[in-house]
Image (cartoon, rainbow, N blue to C red):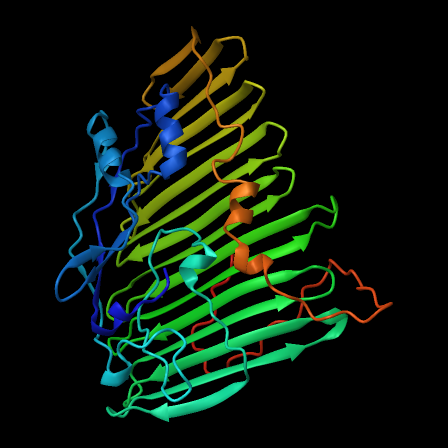
Length: 435
């Protein structure tokens, strides 16, 4: 997800594919299929696809886990389906970089002080989750810098870095950089930081924003935090990301919020909220996973979409398990512009002895209520847990706090957060409000 030098000669096209939604939960009996659904987050509501169209090749940006193909394959088998009208490609293009000199086009992220930072007018990638710190390539300057300049084409750039100190040993090292085209129609900004204090709190983060001459705008932030849990006193690592992009020529855009939380005894929480819009169509998705570290698991998904004509449809499910005993339940539904509603609800009770009670019904009159012999499968532990996140957080863990004077102890106040970075008055892309 880190910006690269290829963004200098890149023209971006946002293409939103058709929405393919089935009002029938065709896999209410398929535990193995739902297992795959949980891992790959198959979207029945197909969201936008973003492609990076370079001069030599076309590189798809969206994750290619086979979700789209498997979703179509499943829906072809259903007896009821709603297929929305195919959507043409969205002209959501970013112009080639106009505010970087030829000498700077291939400069590294942290260039020598004698030259300006390279342009990064690249929107974030969609539907990619939370990147690892190594993918962000955070490299803070070790000295205070405040410099700016003008390129040959009239574009301007700036780079700043510093260190903020506060109570309880708080320290924030930060680097901020950005640039603007000669006519002011395109600009980009980036801020990287690391924070620490004497309580053991450590934080690594990035914030990026930008806009191009077509009016397309984007904003994203990523954070990784190490702290001590208030109740269990265990070490905890939390990662989060927010991303959004908006078209300047269409009523189109998307927003995502992701979070992951881990502690040293296996407690894990993961989730995401997503939203997208293309002219008259909108879609949402929320999902969550919770592992208590002792074998109890809760997972859920809720997806829905609607059009301005009044058509609405969605799908949701939830499962709770412990030691082979648990339940699954869900609903698929559809509402027509006239208000006519169709729905199918289903459920499963797993008794832990090889017996499974399956039941369900729909508004068309179908129903079932049976007990079958079936092996129960569920994931009692996250596929990515505490050991994994510790191994991928070497830069966070290596943050060195200020030296503590003898006899001085930290004032542990878990109810408040360390001071934030100074506000960037030039920011025109504030983060959207959370749900």
